[in-house]
Length: 334
Length: 208
Figure: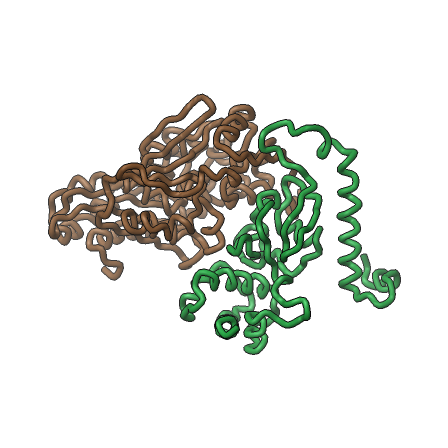
């Protein structure tokens, strides 16, 4: 059946101007509501008839969800702050440059002008079978076309943590937030809670139909960067087919505390290799207290350990290993 | 509609393009007239944040009344209801940049914005660049002098993206400008000449 793609099917649109109103609406519509942030993950699926929400709640008119404020030593970023604003905010650049760099690496200038930090980390996967409307596990069906079909095109898919579904989380900022031990504020009309960024994302082992824990009626309202990693030694690198507009094939976000060249604290997180940001805990444990040069020698083997590569994505294990080395040396040419 | 039919019924002295624009404008007005009897425009607001259909947009310095559906994109409104066909819809997915307009001086993809979300904001399209007397904007003049584009389909998007970029960086290097317009594709692969034209335009802007 031909699909008419020149417009979206109708929905009721709500543009609340306060978080309270948005939460009330989200509570009222529950699973019938779609929460709209920048729109780049949403509108194309409405246009393609992959999602047909009854009500769309656009958070774009809520001033209190936008901007960066200091809270003691922490920085609190409104979830609707655009990626462009995040990438050039003086406090973020000065103290948490890792996040500024990751935000600047997202897509294109226009997308960063409109796309939001909250939307970037809450976006759905870009697996083209899933986005193409195929009835895979993630869409409620009974197979994974990318991972289980002999003809599956899986060059961009997961090498870690895949169970059934081999889709990856495409976000560039999510690994940075996990590395920075960010806290996410999640609210519904009854109240709010704050969770570790690491616990926000879920793999297919926990829930194969979604990439994060947001439930119907819930909003991600703010991202808190604790002082813990302020001014640390950071490294971010994104590898993609094109330098602009493209999703990561693999990215890495690293935060380190060094005394001379000795690693006192470290967090290494890979992106686009699993359904959630993939922390290299084993590498972290092995290199704690080591000289960074020695750590860079040991890290590659451990970083790729346990990778379950598919027919077309074996290069991701090599990339992961080399990126871990570069991150520890802080050298993009290493 | 077949071209010859348009030719035969259009008023004397009107170009084909002007005639088509006037038909589009009339259609928009008559459909908005229906609103006052329809359910969408009647009754008090049911919920906080519920949107109205008949809204006013600030486009190229003019206030334009227009009937906008909740699911309508800015690209649809500007092209189909306000007759501003300068912006192009290439991919309709935020992947090509041909629909770039300025929203409060910031370049955005009009295909990926709901029109309802730009109420109260200043929209600038390529039609708003030239002066009323027809004198081209210096950026347009620079592109013209360097013959920057081949087919020109991507040109309006490139011009608006550049203008928005120059607001924040009026003295870019060629490399910086290339990064600034990296959200725009040219299928003719004419990037080198486009950049030369845009750099010339930026130079003219600094002189004005």
